[in-house]
Image: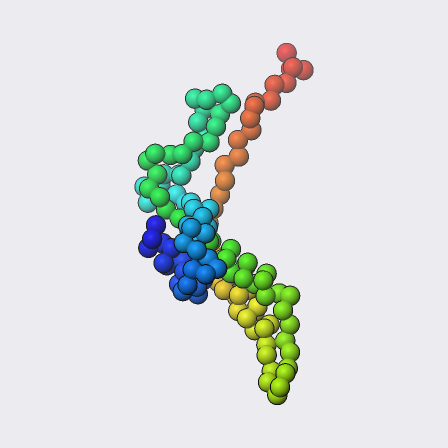
Length: 133
């Protein structure tokens, strides 16, 4: 996990842990599990329980979508900058909009690189139609 955290830190341009601690980045990473190289999903619907429950897959090799995590963090950075404004003072011109635009572009970049995902939808409990005899 340490290597993934270091890589994510580079992707989000945060070399220090003053804002995004390793614990926080680990939570972001774990929010985006993906199918591993063997085709194993991180969880499965266990029909052996009543009602069926989502269960962790012991055969899954921990694999995560760092691009999706980076996109979410860049979105948050952009949200923090959106209320800032450009101004001029003491003969200088300060453009915060440029930082906002960059954060939006970085979020789009990483979102475009993130893994395609799909979700299975299970209807539970099964619908019983008493009208049909």
